[in-house]
Structures are given as C-alpha cells and as structure tokens.
Image (cartoon, one colour):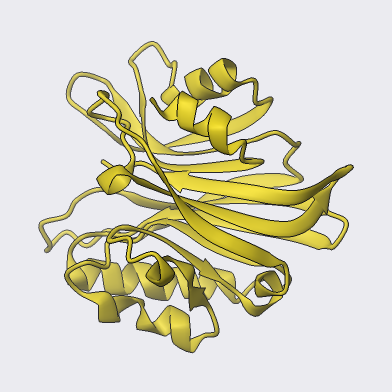
Length: 223
C-alpha cells in the first residue's frame, strides 16, 4: 500500500497526480495524511465523474506551506483528451531559500502535451531559486515534447531511472543540493490511486527545513 511506502521512505513532501475525492468531500490525500501523520496537505479537483467523484492532484507535507496554489492548463476541444490539467505549486521555506515544487500531470495527446509544456515554462519563468517540476508527464510516446524544458535549463532526473511516466525536472539552483533520485515500488489495489507503473520517484535534497537537514520528495500515482 502507498501508506507503507511513505512510512518506509519518510518523505518531507509528497506530490500526487491522481487522487480521488468521494461525493461527500473526503479525498485520498487527506486519508493518506491522516494515516501517516502528515500535518499539511491540499487537494485540487481536475475533473468530476458522473457519479460525483472528483479526481485531481494533491500535495502533502510535514512542514507548513508558505504558499500553496494551482493554475489551470488550457484544454483543446478538438483533441481526444478532455481532462482538465493543473499545476499545483507548493512553496516551502528552507534555510537555503524558498523551495518551490510544481506538481503537474501532462496530457497523453501530443498536441495537448506540447501546449502543457509551453504553459508550464511560462509559469516557471516567473520564479527564481530552487525548484522541481515533478509528476506524471506522459512522455512515453513523444519524448521530444519535453525538450523545451531541457532547453530552458531544466534537467530530467527521471531519465536516470528509465521510468516511463513519472518524471522530475530539476533547475540549476536545485541541482546544487541534489543528493540522489531513486525509485520506490508499490502495489496498490486501489484503481484510482496507484503508483505509475509500480514506480514512485523519490528526490533527496540537502536542504534544511526547520531543524531537519536532508529533504525527501516523493511523486507517485496516475489516472
């Protein structure tokens, strides 16, 4: 179960790209936070099924957010992917400066994914300092779609692990603190919340939040 993987990896920040919220308003990010003792989380709905179930993205942390918000990516009506796409932004203060985590989930349709990347870069260019773009970026069929991120100076850490879906892009400021990137494994029976292809990326940074040195970030799950 994903809770067991979280307890084993003990990440400081968790980015989830596919989270369900039942019609009564209780979402899986909240359930995970409660089960693992994490004190801070936020969930944003991407779309709603006919039965009233919401699906979206979430961030969970051990530490208070300095800022937490989301921005919509555009959806083209002439393409087969009608899913609303988001970027969730979590800002966490460290002794080394503000760390920003951009949690996103790109389209599986090439043309839509290209626009997702362009709009993400537009947002990234508004910020400076350490940052991570982390999530399910769906590059399998069209790896070149992600090239603009690389050309803009963001390095693809997921390539080191050959993970087909989840990726993390690291800017030069974050690379200064990068310790390692590894893959966790999980087998979930939950069809709505599962680790993408049984992988979760774990990013370890030598940064200090409060008195805790050596931060870990985990990204997992898929629609």
